[in-house]
Length: 234
Image (cartoon, rainbow, N blue to C red):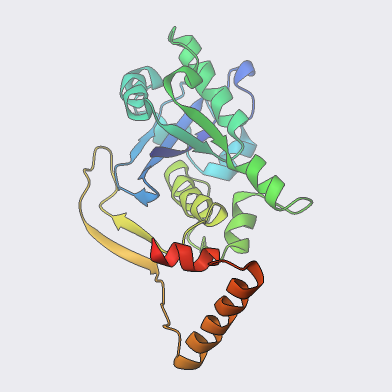
């Protein structure tokens, strides 16, 4: 399964009043492994950021002035997300901004390009009702270090959210991540780092004898071969 963890930074809070996307960051996962095939751009919004938003992301108008406009990266972005499940924290916010950018370009709504949009904020609220479920709060809850996050950044937040998502949906006993150089268009390949390992402890003779006695008791009570023995025979 191909999944894309996505985050944006914006000039403000309301795309309907003209606020624009200034940064977009996407992290790719295949079968719960990070591939290193990331998509990341700073974007010239052709307007200033609101003071409150600037304090959050720190991306000045001057810094963004020579960056590509959204129209210049839209086609590449659509190709990158095509057919994937998109994972976003507070999805309605980011999707609202992407849809506004797409509408300016005469493109169909964002959801038509992807298989599914998963909101980790909604999932976190189900798992932890009544608790703080911001990205920072979830990092703390799941023991994920975000000490290097002094300002919000789309790619950094996507990378953190990927770790949070894996922790929130952990349903396996081992997990590994393929680590490659980040950057748009990186291919698969690289070293796998195990984050957890399964330790198998064989039963000792006393435990085996106790197990056999239990099975004999089940056979006697059922007056037949118990299910455990049938499974072992198969």
